[in-house]
Each structure stands twice: as C-alpha cells, then as structure tokens.
Length: 124
Image (cartoon, rainbow, N blue to C red; front, side, top):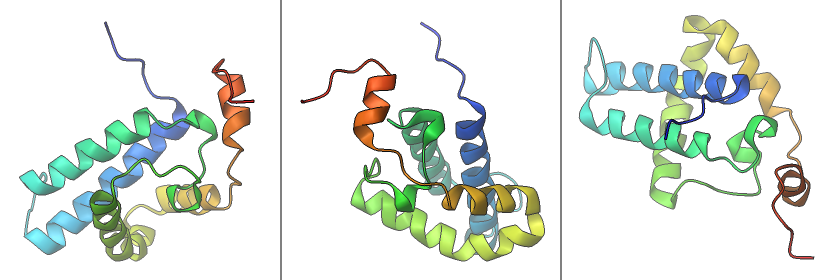
C-alpha cells in the first residue's frame, strides 16, 4: 500500500519544521550538513504526526490546536527548536516564515466538523 502524498498545507508545515531543525542542529550540534541522529528522529516524528493530523489541510498552528498529537516530551523538544530557530527563520526562510505567521492566525476548526467532513461518525 502506498502512502498518500500530503496536501500543500501539510507539505509546507513539514518544510517549515525541516528548516527549523536544520538551523537548530547546525547551531546547537555543530552539523554542517544533514541532521544528527537525535534531530533526524525528531524530524521523522514531526512528519509522521503532521501526516496523521485529524484536521488535515484545515489544521491550525499546533500551539493553537485543541488536539495535541505530540507526546509531552516531544512537544517540549519542538518548542525549544521553534524558540531558537523561529527568529532566525525570518532571514533564512522569509517565505516559510510569512506562511507560518499567517497560519498561526488561522482559527482552529471544531473537531466535530472535521470528523463529519472526513466521514467519521461523531459521539452525538
């Protein structure tokens, strides 16, 4: 079975977290190319979580979401990466930064409405 390609919004989120982790790993772990094993694992985890986001293309920014897909430990690790890399993204990846700021203003849809659109029966 082949995996479905992510939509534009999810692909952009994946590109953003990839860029942030590259900045983090280069500056914090001294990597000049690629990611260290620890950062590569975090990136794989983040990509997997984005692919199964219950909101799909309608997803809000993760910090505004009512459903937390990340474990507490991984969420804290990603927060540290974003706190460090976020301001640096403005110079290195201005287009991704702009899209991320726009997406942060996006209102989180109600989970029940997302479930109805996806054909999942609700509790009611």
